[in-house]
Image (cartoon, rainbow, N blue to C red):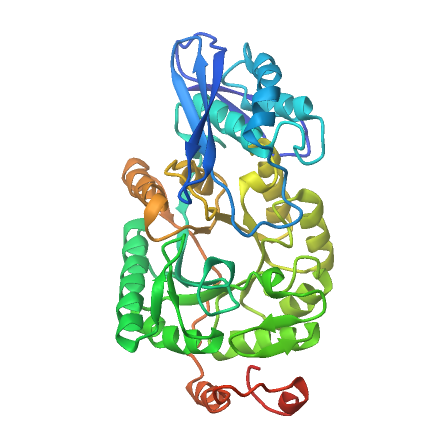
Length: 456
């Protein structure tokens, strides 16, 4: 396969590889079409399809989120999208299908706003992905060219849901990471087995409510009881626990409101509580433990939680300016990457390069309103993301299957490397927390709990 390098474009960025298969003539984009399809929530999702001059077709479907950060890129309604699409289409037709970087720049210039307010992020990213698929022959994992070794990410699976996704907890997702898995198939199977056992045990205990939009179980257990319940199961399966707190969703501007625990915590108390939770339950992964503008609070927590992943999602929104601020303030050591929070593939690639250059781990993530398109798996591999946050069932099954397919297709591969630590859950402290569980109907004030050791 012949290729050429663009050494003039954005010299501060990684070298871009353009693919030119042997004897392939120059081909251009002949047509662009858009379709209103459906995501896993039954809502409209945008599908973009391009046709090349060699009459090949490449498409991409864009998901949507439920809990969105205030700093995400804009999306626009279908009516406005239909109004702006003819101009966008006109600017894309005739471009070299192999030059996805130039196409991305033209998309950005066509919009001519800071956050895709004019053409919408779904259209921008959909065209970007479709052209990148054309450029790589539907093999997006080759986006950065040939590498010595490809590292497959570990799937971070959602087993119990809460917060805006339903259930009794303020915290939004209780997650498992099968960090001992030797293959993507073993990792997927482990997460599924954990998910299945969790459902069975919740049902036996009379705590099960239902399944939510991400196919995670919802229960009647409060935040701490959920962790107590999950800890022994995680130990049995040899997986690490993580939590997406989605703290902005229960922040009222002054305090963090825990309805099930009947408590309100100040920012300082929230930091202490999260640090204690991480210690007691040996949490590996802590996403959005504070609200989306608290860079200073994140920094304090990050400095206290050595050897764990403090992850920003709403804090960063895959936005280069916010990531740069996070690097400067040392607010996190990892960040969620959701391409439709920010821009085109080239824009997101530059954010990831900035993160890696400064020692921050990218965690590629799905959205709650997912589609069955599997492009996220390819990108996780292309971007060398050690963790991919995807569901155990539903529309994310094709993403797991894509990893299985690529594992057999790629010769030089291994599972990703993760920061490694193996501390046992502190059973004695867990028992002390059990003693602190409030009596039904009792509301403890902050003053009453000030001198009490424990999580809350």
